[in-house]
Image 1 (tube, rainbow, N blue to C red):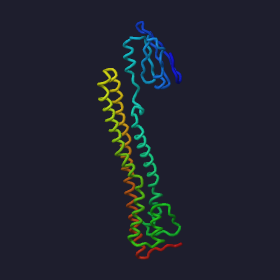
Image 2 (cartoon, rainbow, N blue to C red):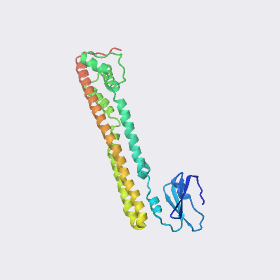
Image 3 (cartoon, rainbow, N blue to C red):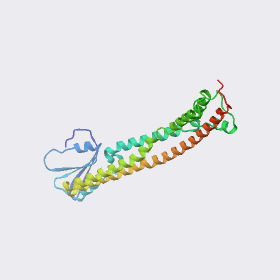
Length: 266
């Protein structure tokens, strides 16, 4: 027996109905395919993933059929090249949900001190920073004395900034299932185009691989899209809540600045 890359981890020999069988467990599928016997035409080498079965030439025992039928459980590797765009969708969804959940916190959008000041009728002074959206709107209103239209426009800019990145989440929600469907179509095409040319036994293996690709990509696509859809709905609800608060603040500022109830204290 000759090989050219790596070592095998286990070897087990069996004798069933007076027929010898040798099973080799290799480190990888590529190494299993590299194993060859010296060409004396007396042995047959069969591969199944990282397993190699070596028998005498012409042996078609029930054990051989059992060996061929062994299949590993579904794993992401069986999704083929579609795993890469699906993984990209997953990473984008996780990043956007995490980043927006942090950025839409009350402390960065509409702090409690601003809400308290509005409820009690007390307006801010120079001690307020520009850390949150509400504080930036207040600073613009007090320092620059803008017109009503200008202040409303700036308020809309701050509200639009709250939605930053959410369109990417919408793309992920739509794209992940579509990529899964593309994998499904590819798997089915692989099955029906290859089966007639490969005979029953080989066609059965291709059928199994194609169906695994078809089902797995759809499952992964939906598993990404559903949580992303829930996260998107949650973030949209938070943005609407923060936008309503900023609209309330802007309206109060327009009223207060217009009647000279507040002034900037440097």
